[in-house]
Length: 254
Image (cartoon, rainbow, N blue to C red; front, side, top):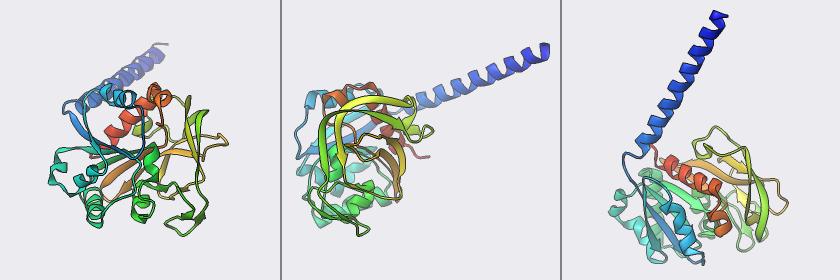
């Protein structure tokens, strides 16, 4: 009996040490404020409710840049002062010089990138963008970077569906339940790269299965989250946790 109690006490102490270690690790994340740029433009959204998401995060300071001027950041050395870029635009126009700048900052410099919701449909004629974020939504029939033919993708508003964890051990899904419900817009009939690490999935008939993933592009960490159309998503605490975790992960250097 004494031996059993001793083993229990040792196990309890070890678990408490682990919790304390994790808490210290979380605290270290907040020792330096993370600076992010949120790119918008080309799609209306509920501005106050959307930016309230980022206002709710500790240790994160954000700035908005609107298209078309926003793409100039890819040509600026000032981008060194920021830890990550968040894409929430729906935009097609980009110059060759801006393309080269985006590739440099992501592939070579390792700038973190979080792409949200409709940004999956950006730069429909630029294959490298689809390779960067790991997918392409077809605003018109076309071909994927690997040569497959797709019809126009579909979207469906105000769908209540169940989100399930595909990888419970990834830092981006930390603190999320095994599954949760959300009311949001779904996408169906789009291309997904084989090199992504699936984070969230759904089995709703009006959505393609994978709805969030992580990947690498050169030295950058990339996360895409399909969720995030309107206030029913913005106010969902699990969605907020997901976005916060994603920012922490793409800005980390492990």
